[in-house]
Length: 189
Image (cartoon, rainbow, N blue to C red; front, side):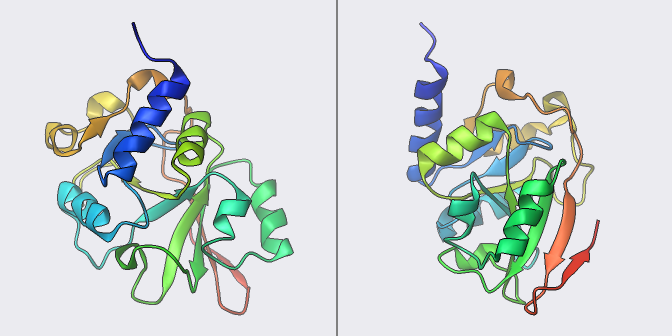
């Protein structure tokens, strides 16, 4: 008997709580993820991706309320986040309570508030933000479909989420915005 979606999500969340890594579908492309507050788990993601530690990772949250636990969100920023119709990652200054190795040298962090049903449910069940970096070896092309993911990525993670939860039609990296310390906004991508 197959587990229900809720049991499946609980199982994935339990793996995250143990410091395990996941290969999972996001609102954009397939991602390699882990607990964004666990530095050892984050180190595993860097190793799987063969990514230099000085390159930052994206963090996903399920709600504005969760986002506010880690960065300063003004009412203007909150309104902007609700207005986005496409996946948008925002670089925030001065994050708190996240693993040091997800925070850039300039003391910023890239966070995306996801609206993808599987990701939202997973993050909500886990109760903390999760890392999301594209499921490719650093420097190689970002795979748009599961079938394009390199075998060493699939073999490198602890858990591979079922492809049936890949409901995104976006299939490209998210838009990227930076919020500066003075709250000015810069569109990067």
